[in-house]
Length: 173
Ligand SMILES: [Ca+2]
Ligand SMILES: [Ca+2]
Image (cartoon, rainbow, N blue to C red):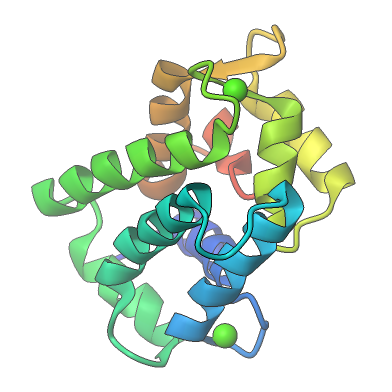
């Protein structure tokens, strides 16, 4: 069972993944997210970067595969699996994938511009991304390390603390 806060956060994630905002998460949403990010980065279809991006999103799509997943169904599924060892394992591997996806320049840190670009692909605007980054970057050094990102992700997807910085992962809170 999700708490109210967890349900709110999972709804934010759902809306970020539902690219065409029709209330249903489908394979086509993930394909559009790939296209958005590739366009922002100037990556051509068929390039190695594009293929890598495609594989990363399809890896994240796998656990969502129940076709035409609506928000109530999604929250119901999450409520039954949140904080199980399986969910934690899945979160760890997806978090690694997402970190690599956001860290475009490969310096093993996420900068504000990289974060904003990733959110832009999910149709979250730059102002929201900038504001969220300030919350996520708790020590204010302008970067998010891999360890910090793991903590942010765990706070967002599992936590129930309304003051946790990780609540800002998807741009607003
Ligand atoms: Ca959709
Ligand atoms: Ca980077």
